[in-house]
Length: 347
Image 1 (cartoon, rainbow, N blue to C red):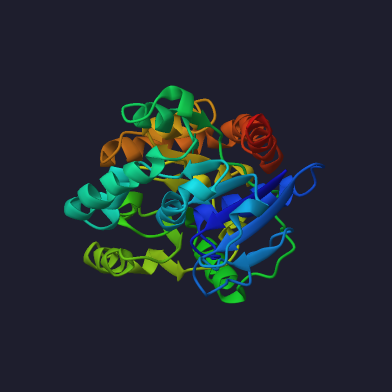
Image 2: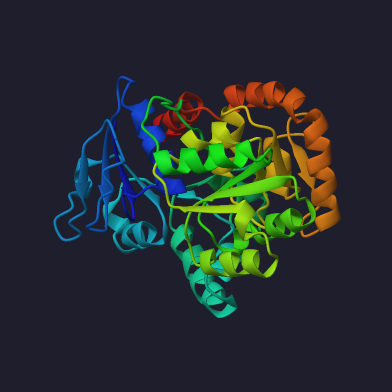
């Protein structure tokens, strides 16, 4: 069985990290050959895949060489849509709630246009993989349930031996030396991530500092807000860092205040590192974990977030082992790979 997986680019972002974990588990399984293709020229050297990778030549791609084409992202989906008659079987993984994601990333007009376009592209696929049950329910208004498959994302074991940025570690140690507890947050900084909620919390809780790993359109706005709230001296903006998860173990708490998520990869990464986690009460997060494993707060409610932090201070360390057990039973790379292998084999 030969499978071609197509992604827009090879960079350290959520969907590509998931594909990396997937193929690095699938290649160990007998009876399947994986090839990964990418569209953009740039390749992040931090992406390590144990299968052949190649930039996609749209004019010379040999569709007959593959039993299954598995796409991820709107441009790979468009490529498959245009060449649908040449493809034996097409599977697309959906990584987002399309209209919500495009609205937060761009605007409502772009969301309306490209969201509906994406639905058309998905309509010609044979199978659509949703990364949560909440997502399957969302897309069932456009597609039959027989076309929708649920496979949770999974991640590999973290290599804690990697060399980290010494300046960041020293800055974190300095924060701790001031007897401040550290709240961590990470991800692409967009409005959808809701990081501003943590800054408002910090303005009320003087005993905490915030370390943010990531970059994005909201970075400048968040820095300006920190200055406005007079908390800049307790906020460390680290920018993008490869293997961001390796810094998590230096945090006292991890907050995931997202307004919308297709899955929540950073949430399971924090749980994997056995840190007390606080997260917004959106439907996807409540599906992944329960209140015995993480601490929830009401979205866009500063008082609720404050109460959640107080509760996590008391009970967070008791929850980490329960959360880790849930992680090991549901969200590891081998489990995800087995589910995809079963799907591939079934077609």
